[in-house]
Image (spheres, rainbow, N blue to C red):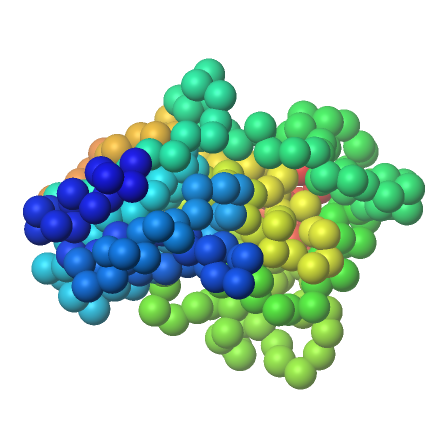
Length: 297
């Protein structure tokens, strides 16, 4: 692998290669170039996980002509797909060196279920949400229990933004979670459940289920479970599999996209999806909307 990376740099096929370098015994994200080829000896291939694709998108935004290579696990490949669909990266400017970690049977399902189960304490099992729940088991509680359990989880949030900052597919230039007219400031926890529902909506059609948000969360909130539910709704409504489907994401129609992405088909499907969501969630006021979203999962 090292010889291949060296060849990519020396031949000029890429200008920079993003990987991990062992520094004082710790793997850190690092940019290798033709000027530091000798440092490839320190490249780290272990279990370190950091969203190199997010760094790549940032670099590409500042220098669109930069040719970037990076080590990519299967979840990285899915994130690269999402970033390409959302016009954050040009596939012709990216060269991937695969570092597979998923069982082959999972690659086509945008599912990182291979991640190690988390240790869950007795109190969390009694009054919260078990991070290891599959979606259907989380829905087995009655409506009020689901709402109470999710509220318990969200009240632990310290608003560190770790889930957003580590997310490989968070790329908005202005973050809704920092808009004072939407998210209040100066108090903890952030408004329950608005803060996490706003982020969950942003994950619809974007989340690649890499699990980095849960790894970063110091409050042990079952974020993967929440985002998997959102993506499940997207799949059911639009037949769109995040990180696997290569067409336009359903909610791109809500933002500014290139002309070729606008069309009646996706718009009509989105309109039908909104109607379905309204039937499922809305009961006349904002509080009921929050209650219904939480109690459906």
